[in-house]
Length: 464
Ligand code: CAA
Image 1: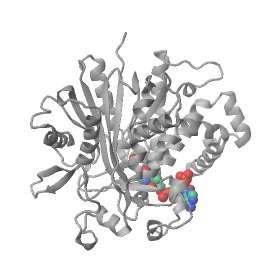
Image 2: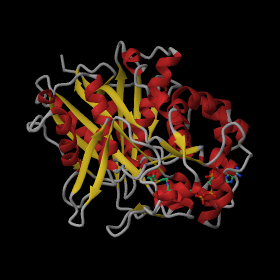
Image 3: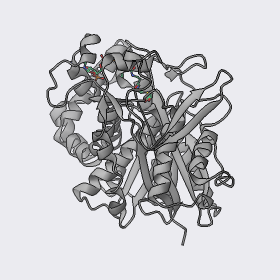
Image 4: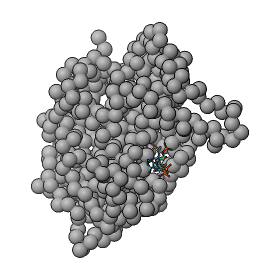
């Protein structure tokens, strides 16, 4: 029988600072941020779906976020460095043009485990905007499927600091974080299907030029690219899943009926919710349930009935808003997707780390609610600007819930402190903090960046 390969455990690193965009308890009450940006906090909470954005402190870059997540994963699983064959990093906010975050991670880990402890552990940095996690994971899965693991594990870690210029529409969709996945044979959480859907084309929706610390984005265009690429990748996955007889839809059924919990790239929660609505419509068309939906909300707008493309797009967007309000959509959304989005609502975007952070939250929440998912299939959809989407599927393993209950993810979101607008803007612009402070929150039991010399040497240490 073919060896099962997949994710055995997950550790998320959540920065301990956040900026409040809107209050969950009093959604109408202006926040310091909404007042400063002269906007309605309800737009953040309901229009975009974000209440808080994670903010890194002065001593944090993408390397320390990654190492903190990986360190927790290694310690929790009592892993021996000799049994970790590779530690690959997915990021689009790496710290050097040549030296990969993977090398800095090695250096930091060896401060704890001894010089040379990881010399037989390989590592590389993957880049393709937010989708690189899917590429890094695919490579680890392939390596194990090819029979090269020999009992050893690999770690795939995604880490990013999502940053747009102050006072721009992108500003409310920032965030930061890292997530480390333990990949091995006979995994305790999820075993992956050997079927991966891809869609790729050259797009200018979002990029970060070499000279810039913030991204350039064509926001509305990027949303269309996300939807188009995700649909293309899902179709490619579905073709292969049917051919491999993984899933067969019976009469009146759709393929997605056979896929339970799903986790998507979440630049902001409303985008993932919309993505899921487009996916359901795509698979439900022609089924009796779609006839039932259209009986309530009317027929879909047709491009040919509009003189201008923008008019059609407006009607289409309005139509999908109505679909998202139907009980048919709401049931599927609450059952399959919403639990994972709690992370993004509380923490914002973390680019390459976003989908797997939401997957962690999805599994932890379902496990703590006592949902029985062993043997069921779930799916992941990753999107990276530029642009590419990848879709994969996996099966819950017996006992997955005992592992997921112990992630500690929700607790990490609760143990954070808010930053003031002045602190946030100083951290964003790497300017001086109020009262000449060196940082906002004292580091505790974590790796920190100490300094960067004019030649670009980066020094890190572990603080007890
Ligand atoms: N109450 C409730 N809803 C409100 C509201 C209010 N008071 N005011 C506005 N809204 C709604 C709007 O109707 C709109 O809803 P729809 O999208 O359903 O039309 C929503 O809030 C957003 O408001 P705006 O249309 O005014 O949008 P904006 O100008 O603030 O820009 C954005 C939003 C495009 C997402 C912008 O934040 C942005 O550019 N973000 C970065 C790019 C991004 O995240 N793109 C996603 C796809 S690309 C990707 O996924 C890769 C990645 O990680 C970047």
